Length: 103
Image 1 (tube, rainbow, N blue to C red):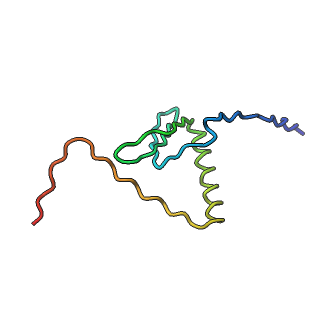
Image 2 (image 1 turned 180 degrees about the vertical axis):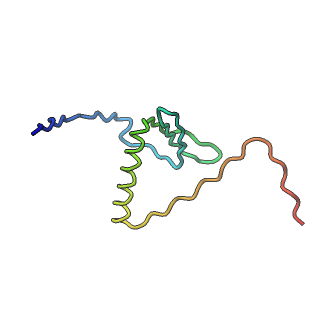
Image 3 (image 1 turned 30 degrees about the horizontal axis):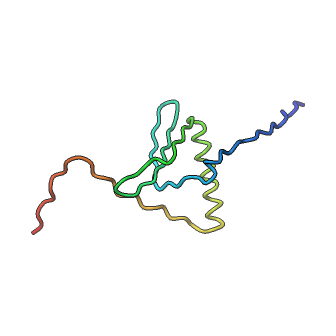
């Protein structure tokens, strides 16, 4: 019979400046073959700013997605169905032709 490896306790330092967290009302995801980049933003028109950037391996991204799904299901079973937030309007950048006259 194989012995189970001993569990190792890992102490995690939580920097003071991160304890309050950051607010995000938008997120952009980009990826390469090796990593996913999640840019969390606070958009308050007419400007926005990145509040946090998280870089993950594809395998960790999949585990995180599974953990989020599980926790959302637990939340909904306790507090009720969550409705998806509507998307913010996309900013128009560049030149745009005038709208056709009405009439």
